[in-house]
Amino acid sequence: MDQVLSQNEVDALLNAVSDGRVEGPDAGKQDASGIVHYDLANQDRIIRGRMPTLDIIHDRFIRLFRISLSAALRKVANIGVNSSGPIKFGEFMNSLPLPSCLNILRIEPLRGSAVMVIESKLLYALVDSLFGGNDVPYTKIEGKDFTQIEIKVARRIVMSAVDDLEKAWAPVFPIKISYSRTEINPQFVAIVPPSDVVISTAFDIELEKMSGSIKLVIPYSTLEPIKSKLSVGFQNEQLEVDHIWINRIKSQLMGTSVNLTVNLGSCWINLRDLMELSRGDVLILERDSDKALDVMIEGIHKFRGTPGIIRGNKAIKITELIGEN
Image 1 (tube, one colour):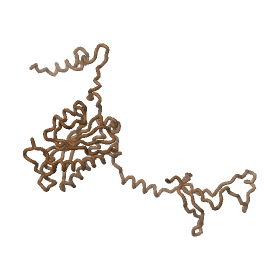
Image 2 (tube, helix red, strand yellow):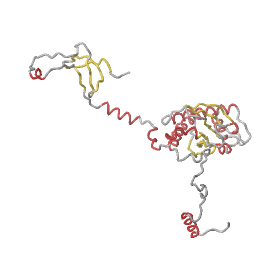
Image 3 (cartoon, rainbow, N blue to C red):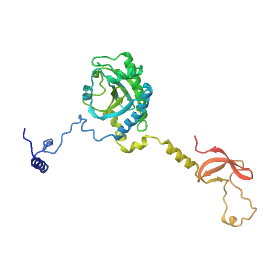
Image 4 (cartoon, rainbow, N blue to C red):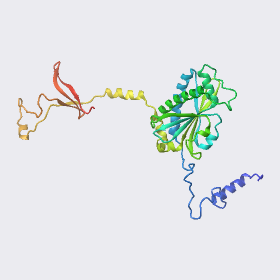
């Protein structure tokens, strides 16, 4: 239809849809009984909401991997997140060029495997930089297979990224990532069926004369058991251990005064004898003089020790810790 609606016509049409006089695009999806058809095999309906903690993990991974990659290349490498979100695994694999450096990773104790994809031009530039070059990749990449040296360099980069990824995950959910193999053809990588949803995250890497991306693909079914941990947005402050704050609290606690009492012993006495006590009377305690005494800290039994005198002052020598393994 070539006719363009005016603003008044658009408003009238929207009002008619809201009043029910005109059926909207979602009309007809439920039968007369009011039952809405639900496809259990369609994961698009299952995934709801974002996983902010996963974004925090990726940010921490970027900081760690930037240091590792810059140290390996002996030059500054800038890394940032380009995109992150759900996508069908088949659509993602169809978007990859040939050849592609696809590294299959096993994530334990979670189910399933992940894929780390290194862009071809980035891999050639990294190889060139590691061997003393100037980050300039090949001018023609299409149809060129990777050599054994390039595959070994790719594995070295992946293992470095895996170590940093484990450290980034540790505060949220400790995982162990192991390298499985490297594939060149996307058709040989089938970690999940093509219709399954995966979480794809692209990390842009900028060198001095070239830039490329590393993509991390994790199946949604792998992250689903720990989705509750990844959906909590306030875990940002819990990921990093603030050692400065811990040391400050520790120093304040070490200067806190506490009451220390030593239990010399006890005995039972009736009220008549208590009222008749006078100076010089002797009370026989139930504890022997050669036995260790109980030392109480704020009323809690923490130590045992033997009594004594140091420089004219009454003292207690700690001989045993209570409750220590």
